[in-house]
Length: 332
Image 1: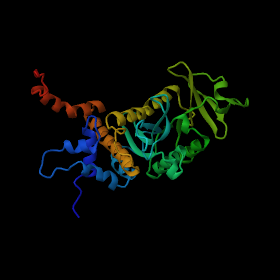
Image 2: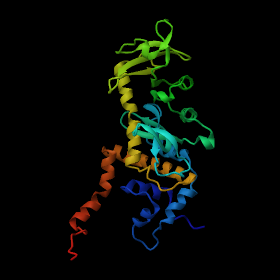
Image 3: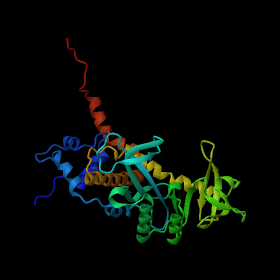
Image 4: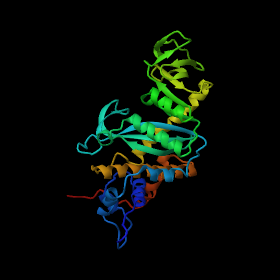
């Protein structure tokens, strides 16, 4: 059997290099000139041939992280697909960007960060019709997998969506600590005064208050003023955590939002033209692996993701400026 003309590494390199279009046709057009250059159909075959597998990501990502330090951040993002009516993985999801429910693919990611680097180590794609799993099921799977891989993070951070009692107990059972936001109606007991909503407990700012969370036990809750002036409630199992430390961990956990933005803007994860189940999953996985390479380069060179992406096309722009081809010619 002849080896394939296009491998997963070839597809990853195309994702990193292309500034806008992620199509097999465009991939074929930009190949270096040779007698046996791969055509567009050679780029569609890997998407159908490869077995979607997050384990390959882990094999590459583990060389970039420290199992004994840093924090794990878990969050999901909606890959918007407003015009992909027949896509195999499109559901209706909330979009933080649009502040509305939109059609898209929900990507759930477990990210390792030390406050500087941002390395995805695991991911799941929401597909309840096929596997019957909720987002919380994926949450539990990825954390247990991380524990088996030997992680000993300083903290696990996640949004209020994942702050259920079951998830908090899972983090505790793994021997880890957590930092999460609480919804305003979560029931707490302050100084044995009875259960009440966290928003009605009269919590002060500062270094937080140790309270009893219904169904879980003692936690420390911080009342924080959000950018819109409303109050946010952050909870941690680290009762000695100060407000300054909470702010530091919260800032580090924001790296996952930056990661999601880079996946969409620099690795073009939303731009795939495929619609069938396996090609869509493989495109997502290959885009995440492309990000790991981009992040590794940027960390080594101490540049931003957008600087790295721009530098790829800079030579092409310079060559065009030295010899412009699109000129205003008389037509009369």
